[in-house]
Image (cartoon, rainbow, N blue to C red; front, side):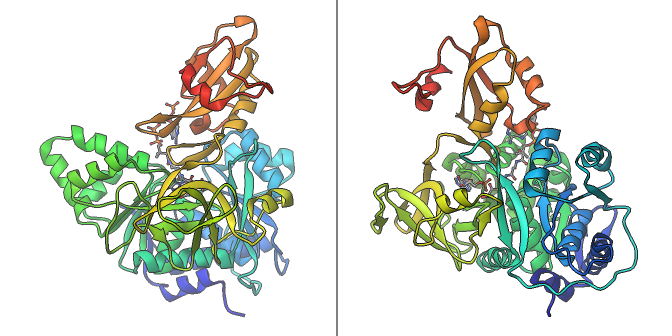
Length: 495
Ligand code: MLC
Ligand code: AMP
């Protein structure tokens, strides 16, 4: 039985650098060796973990990848969890996925070990676990590989299940479209519990035999130093990061600015995605650096689906055309497939890249597919002279802040636990930096006072910081319709 495709690809580049930092280089062979040792530790004498769920808590870097490959090679399913999540959020992901093991880097061990003890989970320190590599199971690509938690139209996040075959399809489509090669060098600074960081940057780079420079977060000064030194051929980020980079360039000394701009200008490709890139940001970036950003559209459930071309027109405000192997259609509210240009409809997707199920949620899975098998994204788009342009979402309860997808319902449920809050409505308001800013309109009990700084502090023990409201409006009443339901569009007027 051959190895998993991702492992076979790594073996082909055994002696190349997979990761490079100012202090060290990690070859593909070193990652393969570490992952085989970790797989053996995980197996602990069993022949195959048979899709047991193994949570992964670690920053981007060689340890993360060694653990990812190790658990895959042992036959387990990876459940990456957010480094900065709160304990209740970790607990939800661990219990919902039925994880039996947590793999964490040395720095994360003290943070998660009380929870693992309480839930009775085995905890493995990725940086300490070592030993000889034993026999590993033979695996096929139809095995489940990953459960990624994504917020949506339900209060609690849903686990998106992909197999190794789905991941391979997502990767090969991007490798072909953006012509990744072993000569590519890319910085990795995105969170490692979402596909942008996992699939588009890490897995694509390692599939191609390219080299990654990992940062534990978006460390702008350190990254810009490396940009100046021509360290990268590729750059992938969310729109908020381009907004922040534009702000930094605008205030930089002219000599410093020209060094940074030179580094960006010499890259072979710069990509934006995960949220709408305003045409004005696209155009400003081109004016500053000469680079035309390539905007693409994707989603946890489908990987990347639509992209502007590597060669050809990259149109500001548009996301381009279907990626290789991916089928796209627009469907009207009445259920007709739209064939005309300029008529908006819901984006629906079909192909080997599309996930199989929401973990343990057959009803939610069934609802998200049409009866003819197309996945319903919930995003609206229109096709204009051959290119798709995203128009927004069908649900008002989904917010995108700095590239993170958030559920207004999840945030409302948390706010309702606040002792002063009687009613609330959460919406995303347009924001130049974050795309949308989480904004809460609240009615307090008996008119009790409530201020944003205290509310943010209170929320931070319950919600990841990027979900915490950035704007607050204390009101007497929420706008409700005759049925008593809050009218979210009217909530905007309260700010
Ligand atoms: C950080 N903060 C945020 C935030 N990120 N607030 C709202 N929304 C966010 N996204 C908070 C910080 O905690 C801090 O709060 C304050 O804002 C300022 O922080 P900062 O240091 O300026 O921000 P930074 O840490 O640099 O983070 C910004 C960022 C980050 C853009 C780098 O948000 C990020 O990595 N986003 C990418 C998310 C992502 O990968 N999405 C892809 C999902 S997959 P305080 O209170 O401490 O001041 C997907 C599919 C696809 O969407 O198509 O790719
Ligand atoms: P997630 O569920 O976190 O994977 O986020 C996927 C969602 O991000 C999509 O359903 C879109 O709403 C949004 N998205 C991703 N890329 C783009 C883009 N280029 N333009 C607009 N929205 C995008």
